[in-house]
Image 1 (cartoon, one colour):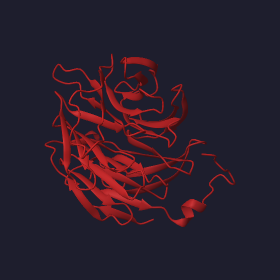
Image 2: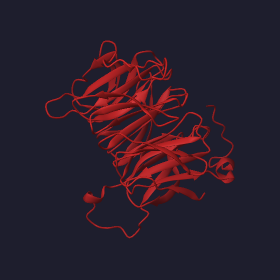
Image 3: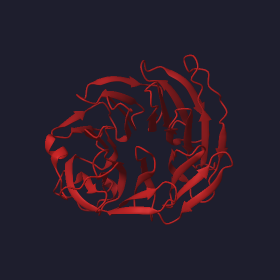
Image 4: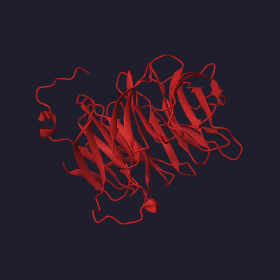
Length: 334
């Protein structure tokens, strides 16, 4: 499984995402740039330039028509995927930390940072798909501030107007975006900041990662913790492998918190855990710094990781990965 190394960023990666077909991989970084790559060979297709600060977050709609991005320059931008044109810019008082499309591509949810007297705010915008996409409503359709700990990650569920949020305190919650009320929460889902949240294909369950060194699978309806994967390093990202019973997690101690330098330079590994038996089944080394973001190809044929080292590594799984049955003839019904 030789990785393809994508070198198109000068600073650390913040998020990477495949489109729904899996032929394109999008990456954003602290160097203000968003890149798009062909996932099969790692060729760079183009860049989306315009942000004036760290691009924290991106998402692509299911048709690969629109791309949204949130940045430290306090802007949420809407881009045309095919030609890299910026179609619309929303401006806020603070940085945009997370964006996500709804499953029907009609809406975008975004979280803005709590800073300088401004609350953490969650806004939902209704997108206008007519014409070339440049006529959008400046005002959000819904907007509210979560009470208590600030939200760090979010995603739409399949239930209309219901979003899942992960918080700085480790809490996971369900919010009704229309009323802004917290419908359900699990205060003790994690013991520290929730760093990533990725949904299963049918959105019935989701995986989160946290600085408390664990990744967990939760039920979307009840927020019950179904599985826990405990590592010895703070985690920045967790992803679910389609068609295989694996969870991929990545993280690492930040350089400034390391007191002794490890001799193993590839200490930053993507770990594969069996999602049912909660056991680690493999590791892939490679990054020279913490892994910040992991994404799995929607067909489950490859995965990509983006690191603090500024590289994206794309791994195409070999035949042995698909043949491997670490626990005998166990067939998982997806």
